[in-house]
Amino acid sequence: MKDRVRSILLSLGVDDVGVASVDDYRSPASPPVGALFPGARSLIVMTFRELSACDSPSPQLAMNARLDLMAFSRSVCYQAARFVEADLGARVMTIPVSYPMDVGDPRKAGIAEISLRHAAVAARLGAFGLHNLVVHPRLGTRVLFTALLTDLELASDPPVAEHPCTGCGLCVQACPTGALDQPGKTDRLKCLDCSQPYGARASMAFWSRFGEASPAEQKAMLRSPEYLRLYQAGFIGQQYVCFRCLAACPVGVVAGGPGASTT
Image (tube, rainbow, N blue to C red; front, side, top):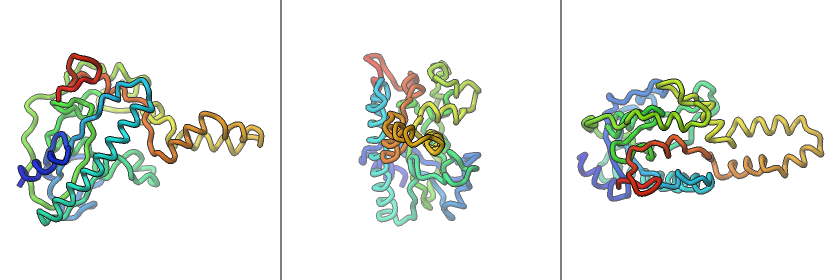
């Protein structure tokens, strides 16, 4: 069964597939799997390789590649779910690569229903690096994950042979805000303010200033680069402008130029 699932998913363009029993999945901040999908037994986790655009000094090109990958991964995840449900006769739910999240509950800020990082580790697709992202043994840090939650009973894959993180510390050094300085923890506010400067916090700050401004100041604010960037982020969605911890990781990168992949 696992081999058939893996073969189908790889044929859809997934770069690697891992399977985890729900019993082996541990995410300290996310809700219990049973509360989300009663009867769920397994997680099928899919790995997608980032393009080398994350090396680009242009945040527009880097983010465009991320948007492309997110759109592709969502499509593949849905196709995979249809296969599991229609061909294997199992119930299945797709796990989003990012949003939607429960942003209305302050206790859940930045917390997904299913942590794809912890799911990937449970599915033996890698281990946590010093930057608290998952390092894949072959593809390194330049990966995104999606997953299926299903009532198929599938055993967890075997552990990775060696911890893929080299402990070089380049990711920590590359962070411009020091968000990774405390081992085992990411300062989310420092990270978000730098990596997503046009997100909710920036929008609230802008409109708070706007409400207190004079009519002439408001007119100028609506013509400012700050507003135009917030406006663009509003209809595109989350916009990352910092990929430095990804770009700095040497795992999965070979000589021959920045971002050259081993695959």
